[in-house]
Image (cartoon, rainbow, N blue to C red; front, side, top):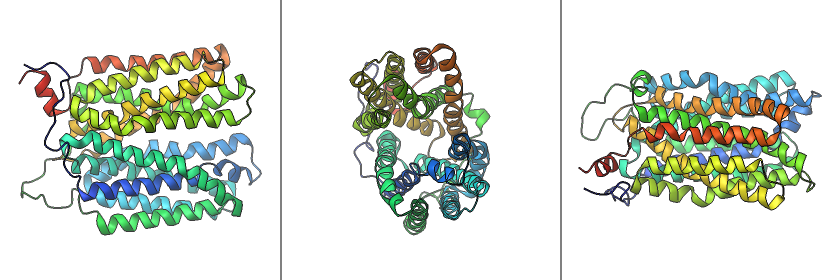
Length: 411
């Protein structure tokens, strides 16, 4: 018998990754850079139509709202049409909607075109995860999820810088450039991506039926992933973006730049650990990495509310980013483990994405109310406590990595 969490190096762990994986990683980078291009100019672009700050904020949130609403349909499309076609279709929809956004002549046109982009976004997000699940060797899933997340992260860091420069030529220009980059990414995928469900299996074996959500919900591991995805979306994608900048502006005299510094510090913390965390989840299993990430994220989020100096705020943001970087690739790999490579799981992946998006939408609203009534310390405490509570279902769920599950059970 071997001790729990003993390293078990699988044959796939150090193997060369399939070419299709690198195509998906390159496309993810292009998408993330493009999204970053338009992010810093979108609110100002909306306000150029003589609307209020609240109306401009709706343009930002409508994208996430349409992602959430269309996620179930996106999962159905993946199961019925196959990952590759849905992926390319999603890229094309976002490309066309982004181009239309750049040509918008009124606020309402801008709102509609931006919302349609959310439909395409959820299509390629779900299909990309389905492709990664299908194409990744089980022993290298964590490493691949780490690479994929790193591509998105680097793109999201570099995109806003380039977007700010392009905005000097006009606020519509970043949208045109983003649209072109998406068309290029679609062409690359069409030419070079050959994997996916609509390809015949190499060994000629028939594919299993798609995994129903009701069956996945009977698996404690998937339920645990839904809970941690919701908590992570609430904290990392919701409260971090909406509440941390307000907290920084209200409590420090270092100017508005401190808010951007805090957000950038989170990204730096994530970038330093995310690839390593993916590799470690392949060696030691998904559970220890997910649990560690939730604990680090939860404690550091609670501490954010007590930060009274800029160095403390930056340090807490870096640590919180590291927690998210440890959590995310292991959590995504765990869901991929539950689905397996021999069947589609579009609806299951859509539900996983919806859990994160729901947290990202609800978190800022509810924490905003708490902040208004009881202050920032209470708001961050609730968010941190939610992350810590998400550890509980993982304590009772068994390991998803097949090799590590056998190791920890003594087989």
